[in-house]
Image (cartoon, rainbow, N blue to C red):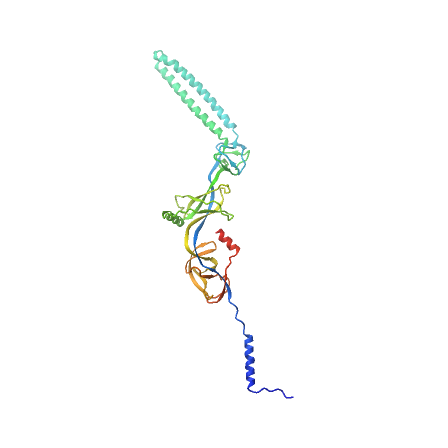
Length: 382
């Protein structure tokens, strides 16, 4: 049986069509444009804050220091609790000082007796001297003896007051209303008025707290210029070690009279109300100061900005959804955001490319960027 033969003109056409369909089948489809998260540059008034590390102190911190030596015989308070002015806190064994008081009281009695004798003798001699019955020398001696007796009595009375004061030092009382700290001494300890053992405790008035912090010389000069321009710093916040913010805002108390030449810094003190006594002396915290409010600032996330050798650039998504690279200038960082001072306009779309490999000029599918919970938390804390 003979094989089917195709006409010669049809064979090339058949081969061409077979090759054409084969090429179309092997050609891969173009991938869809990559998704590019973006944010819209916004213009807003941005408060510019700066944080400074500081330490808290009581509105008034008074150390209780022993002024006599002896055995600690009494403690009449609970550590960490409120005490009232004049409340008895400690007692030191008073026996030695009571003995000294009694000794001087005896000396006072003797001096009083001597003065009475001198006065009686002067009363007796003076009329006789007026009648020339005794010599002027005897009168002068009687007058001198009277004066000496008076001076001696004054002296021993002063000594008695001094001994009574020393005796009173055996009772250590609260100098102010406040909170008392941990005791540095316990019952039975021998207390001396010299050295570390003399420091028994501290009483702090905590209705308000003082916070001392240091600022650089340049920041201090900027602050002084603001004051001269009539723009005082009034917004101070206290950020505690757990990241929380103290509910009451503070005010500036004073700045030190000199700049520390070793560090180039100056110490500034702020004061914060503390009505519920949550703040205590010795805490470390940050003082957040509102330096100024920048009007109509362009703000975008920091991760949208790329830094290369001190130059900053962003990726813009234009109207055709094409990536365009643009150089920008940046200013203050605000939490997880950054103020762009030059190179961006409000409402422009800025791509947050991250680790995605998207070249300039590439077409993308824009999708709104959603910050994760960690970034939101950082933004709130900062």
